Image (cartoon, rainbow, N blue to C red):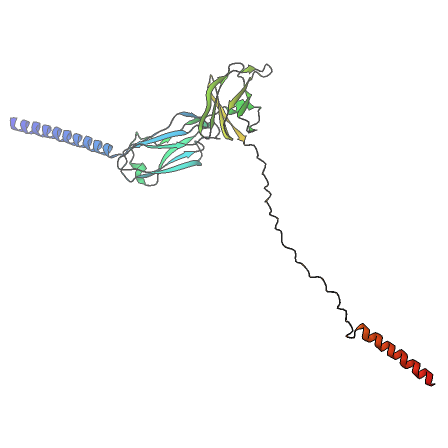
Length: 291
């Protein structure tokens, strides 16, 4: 009886040991499966001001040679990309960076997504992040510009206008040209328009060349918007060059004068003629006498 008790206890212990071994094996399998899953982390700022670049990065442990696209969509719900950039993972698994331009885009939420052309997406870990929804901030509709946005170059850019409901709180103005920063950001006082409550500003910014200038506005609440000005170089009248002409003096062709007709002279001399006439007269007289 005691023997069978010992045999039953042995079977129970062996059964518990087997279960523990199986449980540990399953845990190891789970850990192995989790470790083999690839991880991708897309990072983008939650918001960015319209006109400034949207800078995103991608970190991953994807194997070298893996290709994917980083796509910037014009809407959270529409599959209409503004731009897309293709990447290939290199052996060093360095962080990949991509900037998307936002100039001229309306404010609101947008979508940035990591998209794979192969089966890699199905192998990603559950904590991977392949989608971000940044927001573009734009209050440019609150800005009214009254100075010409196309101006002739005279050494200064005139920036005049108003901001809705700003009153006399002032506004920060920043100017960027084709070579980078030109002015500011600099606080500019505003005068309240009592009819509308808007804040009226005026500022002249020195510029050294013609070109396109982006002017950024901020108030105490943050970024308002951006307006673009064009400074046009003065038109230089074209100088007409009259080619110099050298007077060439040519010797006039001398036409020889027409020779006077040659007078034919009688070969007989004057004495001979007189003698002949005298002889003729004498002969006439003699003939007359005979008759």
